[in-house]
Image (cartoon, rainbow, N blue to C red):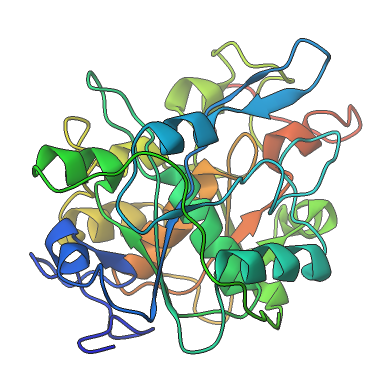
Length: 310
């Protein structure tokens, strides 16, 4: 595959020094490349009426997707069934799902999703979640389509209805434990100056004033950076690299030399976008608290803080 955005050499082609992000023009020129694995990671989550949830993302994918894309169900295929909805599966389950998608050695993976609405585009948080999971499992040749499906369609580029499949292959996981944080790691991080914990939810959710299906507040000592503030709300495109850099530095995400940054949110999805955004502007790899608030708030013995911290 020529001009491949591999690992440290993965700029978007339209501007700005990003890593791990590519633009629609770059992707359009490579749709016929046999080494390309294109994945639609759309997740439209809704209650199933029986106490669980269902992902309608496949419906959106079948109605229209980028030609050559296969669908990854982030609710059922590459996450674990648990009381907290989104949790990492076993390495074996993930490897089986990745292999069915055609992800393996020598392949360049591009992930996108169809999140957002015409009124207010959102960050590609679901694509970022799969990007993070692949890197956690040791696969580096993965990038995210900046602007997602909406940006693709907005440029008048081709789409396709129906379902597509790749030739299955073998995916061998090699987990990087430093890219994930669990309940105990986050609990130990409270008061530890070597660990920066950042809440990726809205400001109201951080302060505890927003209505949420879990206990209100934020993790003690956590700083705040709403993942949605790192994108243009009209287009879903990331802000310029310099602006993202400034906002990340504003919460101290570049100051953890020898330490660790942990992003969390409601269920470990928006936090993955912040981890991607930090890496995209040349920052250090960050961890995602997989259980996030769905796990932490469910335990009444774990403290949460209401309001701003001094």
